[in-house]
Image (cartoon, rainbow, N blue to C red; front, side, top):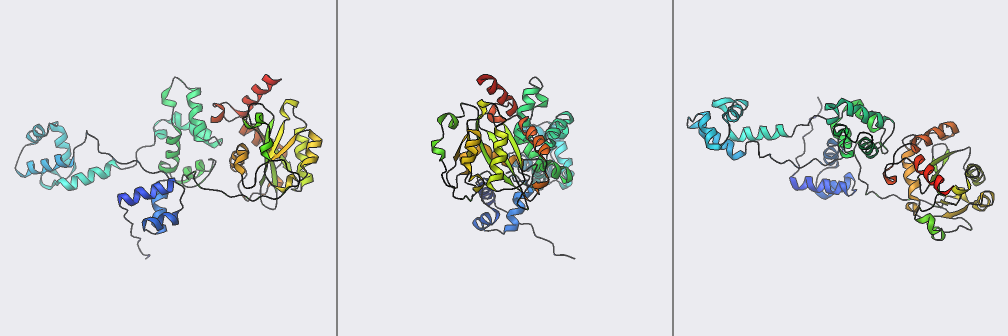
Length: 386
């Protein structure tokens, strides 16, 4: 027989510090070192709750307190009746009767044991709200399977069913249902449709690094027109490559004002191939949507002057190690990992498949667009400038 693992007990202070550091983006080893427990114990603490800190347990004023239970115990020892105990505690006789019979009866009732058992029962997992309301659950699961985020689902429900509060649910409730209350294969399937398909909910505080090359004649993003910086005018794009295995890539373009996405199949990553493929797509756009393109420092855009000559669209480059300067594109590439996980061979993906994925992204409501879809936002801006 295998050795039975002893469960580690955390103090309230240790538990609070662990959750605080997790929220700040610390990793399991760093948290374990700081609070003086093993990495395994810390990992179990975080994963057991799905990466979401459990709410602090508070005793309701409606339930019996430890002091009241002690008074019940003393009353039973002295032979006091249930009704007499209830009157002294200003409680209903039925409350006292249920309490005593629930915890061993007159002969075996013990205040401390009864209070501990009641406290543990109060901590049991509550029934999932989405399971209680099947109609709401079906709506949420359907949108999750369509790769909508919990935030998008929450706002879509309020917009679509404004007068039916039973079909409203916060995005935090959806996350908690996925990571804490849902179990087994259902949890794995639904969580896989989230933008970040981790087993636990991650903090957004983790830092990322990026590697960039040197490009001759690169025009800095600092020289980009103000109208592009404040997203006042449509037609300013951000671009990058999404990498797969076997050196396969696809080009991703995002229009800054509407967040409209275009995906372009690439047979190779050399600068001539990339520039020609992107230029071919850009030239098909209306003139009002051909203003500028912001790229990172990838060498695939080394022939940027050829691109500008072919399209009359100026290319601006981010500062080194500053991917946040094309944040809309970074965000989109993160969304695309739902469809094209790291390690997937992208060379077999057809342009028709890429167009279908882009259409899926462009018809999802976005918080930054006041819950319009990118397709709706682009159509509105083109109509305004047309």
